[in-house]
Image 1: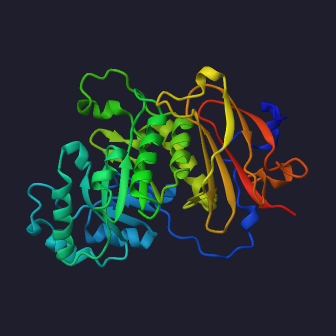
Image 2 (image 1 turned 180 degrees about the vertical axis):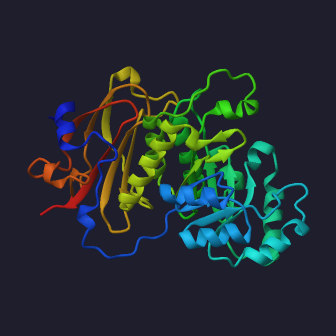
Image 3 (image 1 turned 30 degrees about the vertical axis):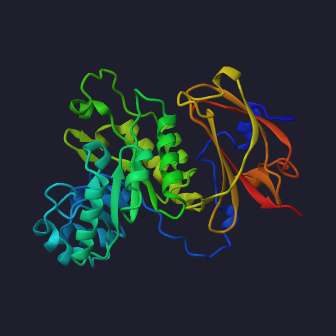
Amino acid sequence: MVRLGLEKLRSLGLVSCLLVGAGQLSAVSVAEPFFPIGIYGVGSTEHLQQVHKAGFNTVVGPANKAFLDQAQALGIQVITSPGASAGRGFDPSKFEDKVIDYDHHPALHSWYLVDEPDMTRTPPWQVAMDQRLFKAHAARKPTSLVLFDGVHARDYGAIPDILMVDSYPIPWMPLAHFSQHMTWARSIAGPAKPLYAIAQAFDWYAFRDAVPGETRFRAPTHEELKCMTYLALAQPVDGLLFYTFASGKWFLPDHPDLWHGLLDIVQSLQKHSYLLGCKRLHWLPSYKIAPYEKRRSETQEPSIHLSHLRNAHGTEHLMLINTTEHPLTLSLSLPSSTQRWQLAGSPSDTPFGGFRPGSLYEIPFEKYEVRILQGILMD
């Protein structure tokens, strides 16, 4: 077994989840497919300018000409409500004009058909019927639908063109709860269904009326927000949004630690776009997690999430994510294939010969830490 101490890992650049670079792709000119990195609660052109500057390429916002035109000028896509929500009272008179006026607009990404029908107990047959009604009124852009519980993809997942799942666990549920819901949705809906993750970028205190009886409130830490972001990419998802920029008494820039932490993550995702839109490869890893009593998270899944991914350029990555607040050590046998492994973004710091497939490595993790290895073809 090769033992990699924490200080050695830090010197090699393996500790930080954001030390992932695209140097190996510098000579590739293949155009990247659009991957939504979005945020909810953008209700004005002034806010649109602000989130554009922050690096977002997608927003959930209103359907009006001024907003859509400004979004188009900034290169931003808009997910918007047609003016009615699927369910009782889904009246064509409420959405016909918007469909006629804006369905063709280049900035319109998708129509937000309904929010959390599983939470509001809107039956799947009703949502499916309203989807057909909506499409019958000349709507050509995709529809999107958000679920509260990923397991309900078995009931609603086939209805929209784009399935989205929100999970906001901080602080009273384990962070692994976020990954669990995304895993359920992806497994049920299948790899072909576009799946967007919605991560928590707010403090439940601002919405405390929605959670009566709860007294513990705080915003996600930077480490938790990074962990949720990479857990989504590890599924993998086809888009990533954050809730929310502004809603009710909540205004994200008024919370500088969370806002600047989110900006740091968004900028990193832009810089390392080769990690976006990967395909997951079959992998049954051989591993152990220590200490033994912490080998499973509070959701009873392995406390370190392991994914083997391939991006659009054919480059493979291993994404290793501690989903808990506990320091852990992972003993991992790297996949045996035509790949050997190097530190993503830091090939010059990789030990001579790289990390060999089939070899066993012992890697320590801090709480919520993400590690990424990149595959390269063996000589």
